[in-house]
Length: 273
Length: 276
Image (tube, rainbow over all chains, first blue to last red; front, side, top):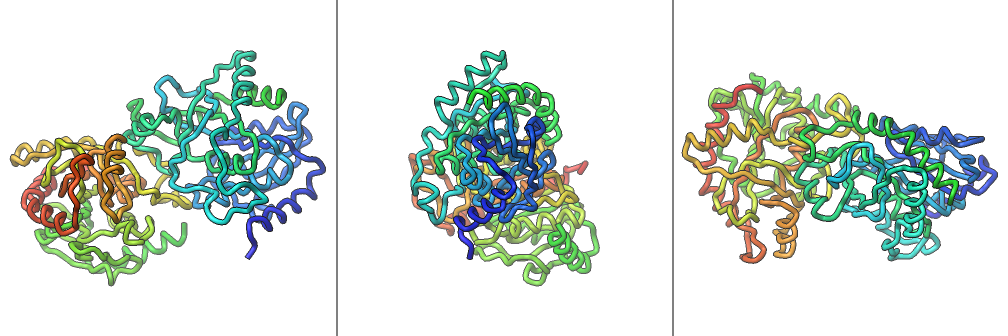
């Protein structure tokens, strides 16, 4: 029975043979945003299929590989394609890549996603810097045995999204004339989109955006003492706000339109980190 | 999703051999409401225990069989007895019958349940059309690989409960002089009835009623493109600041008492439903 520590070591060993440097920044690229990885210089591609203990991404808009190299002079390790709880993976599988990134030396994680806008001040195409989150998935990646080598039994998440980095990113956005909102990301497992009643509930609870990812990865990042920057691309207004149904095509379409602004912002952030 | 499709084929082949109609309306009959199925004409009965890939119902008040035939001139397939998350079944198991109904030809699902009323405007015996729901079960029947032939990866739920059918239901209620209500159903896993603090929380979150079923079946129905009408029978009041201890027998008693009114309403609706 291979435990989590063994798995991390094995995967680390496999990847270390292919990478001859320590990546300092990790990136998880959400729906439609994977194209940012094309900007990475001298890229090393490693397919998830080839990596021991890795699941395979199945959602359209997600490619399924690591892209490792240099971006704006920094050593980065990007996930082009991520794993979601709604695909049927356990929380440990979904977050395993973060464990591996930490083991490889990553200190800051930039996590991105496509999200539904709950805050009525938002509109499709907005970028939102995540300043906090609500886990409404009724599950947690840290349940089960705690390995003290990886982190504490009861990790604090009051500053999961680093406050200093939040300030820094807001400044960078301002300097580059990029409109950047801020807000609370709420995790719902999906895969069905939420009902209007559920969205009203999210608003009441204090959520600004809703999505099906990110929170598990951030929870593990917090456990591992990794700093986090989270950016949501508001691809659509959540159910019940506009009088229209929701569909995945709209999500991908908006993400595509917003792509350039998003890439500019992330590159500037990486540069200044 | 080979496994699921194989199972569906097996199940539907078995059922088709026993019936001689293509059902267009599915009925899921909740606690104490199962006797509506006794009114079905030219009925064929297929017990869950003989159907391949079907679980077996365990709650008192649920019989455990499919009843297929005609009701008010419509071709229906009714579940007399349903499966619940609290019984220990997976979400896939409890919603499998809805997938089978779709395979067999069903275009509309009339789903019923017994529930607790959190809105003080409700009352024991109230019949409430479900306008929307809040999934508080902690799970979702669509988690896992998506069978693209059956439905989309990310189904829209912005209008899960068909507005046209609700309007029709309201009109039928008026015509038959049956008072009906509308509201939001909150699904919990149960099986315990909730504490006052929990009910207060759910009320604040926007729920009008609370119950332990329906939402998983509705999510799967919408995944497959089936139209949904939901009718809740409020069997007890679940008002946080005025909470009395509750037993299942009390729930069944109110459901039994409300039954005649409920049956009249459903039959009236079945008669009126035109386009499916």
